[in-house]
Length: 423
Image (cartoon, rainbow, N blue to C red; front, side, top):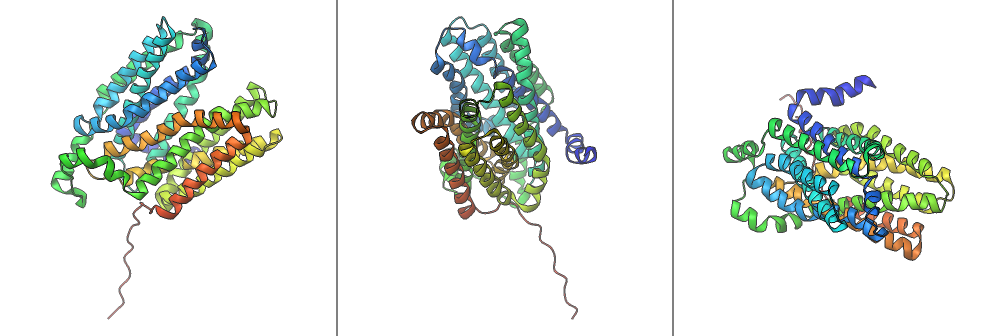
């Protein structure tokens, strides 16, 4: 096991300093989000607002990401990746500091929007830079390492946030996140290389045989041209359904179903969710190898279908053992599908449009992030948790099947020379 981790994680990070810098910064940024997550509802409640308004503090963060992703992609093409990678944490630090100092609930809402905008800037810049430094042959493996750093950060954060809030008050985690964001900003400013200039030079000299679109055409027609590509549109819609599953199904419905139907305590639910995260991490590295060996599509479709099966099992679960089994299947399925759609989107990004492509791709994902809790929560109120999860499964499986039928594989297979027959 240690040998496998050394070969698949440690060695690539040592050999690729840009990847190491990016993963370390991303882990710090995501730890900040994790620190806030268990504290934010309690902090919002301290302003004397109801449950719906507490939900707004979470939704507005996702709404900011939804609004900022695509402009961030345009900025990355015009001004480079670095401006997002140190500018994003700077904006996050400002929003977090304002949140900790918030005198009113309206101020808190505004601060969460600012923090969400900073998150969108950084995460969009990070995925674009990752696309720049990877190739078709190693994109799956390196994106798996990057996603592992995200999971590590978001997993470590809640415990830290809880202890800090308990010891120093509910506002204290916001100040800690501001400090972490400043650290990420300084690290990115001092160490993160610029990659857009290398790509522009390559396109001018014709490296890779690609044709560079004119700046005017890119600005005017880029979004429309991307959305008319069936593979890109389908992977975006599938990603939207995956994010909808993550925030609406896993984070909203499953805790409520476990408590209300099965009588699970918060501690028991925490153990199930921890198991799912551990399974996510366990399958990430092997998944990266699979993505680069058998193809993006060959990984995306089965794993999405497996996740759909898990959602159906959750929907019909009548005892804790079926709930746990569904959690195991869900953890494996979502862990496998994780980096593959992003690798697919990166593969088909036109030359000179990587920033716009990945910004638009993230916009679809964040649309699912925002829609999921509201849509599935409303369905649960109308028809119950089971039907809401079944609908979630139907959406996910439907987009997976459409992707299976109409999207092409993007991994380029090496051409094996055929032996010539003797004359």
